[in-house]
Length: 210
Image (tube, rainbow, N blue to C red; front, side, top):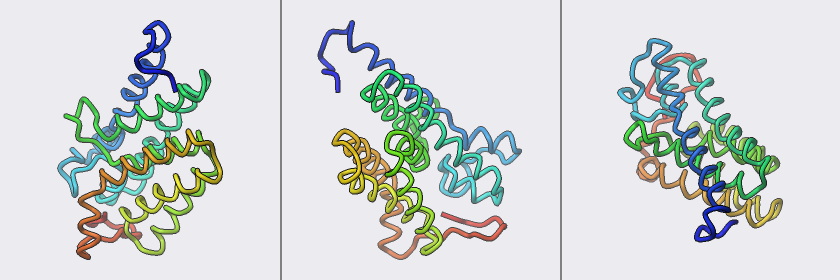
């Protein structure tokens, strides 16, 4: 990684990558799609989160799926575009993107939890690890029906798998994603421990899914 205190003539490219990644990550697809679909402000529904899990509470599976894919896609796009200029650039852009998703400037820094965006980043930077994390997420949802637990298991697996399958830098990336996503799920963790977390409904009806 570049020295952040180095010459600005050299480091400004990296700052720009992080800032542009942040701006891309800040696009609140869940909020935008919900409004376009006539569902109102998703922040006033369920948990108030702008991510796909909360969109699923509306019972609109297509909108929830589109939110999931677009949130993951912006993480992947940030990594793909910046990776043309080197791994360091890709890491900074991807890091900025997931931070932007979790703490978007235009929504008073109240964004999503970073799961889909983080998985999109991993699928580009460490495809094997990203695919494994996605598999863990899907299997966990089907087995336990807790969206939060599935997300936590997926991101925790990623840095462990990266240790064996990727470079030390990618271990750091996966670790950063895991820490950020875990912190964003702290309320869910409390509810899981207390046995109060709601399960995901896989039937096609609206409900208080989490």
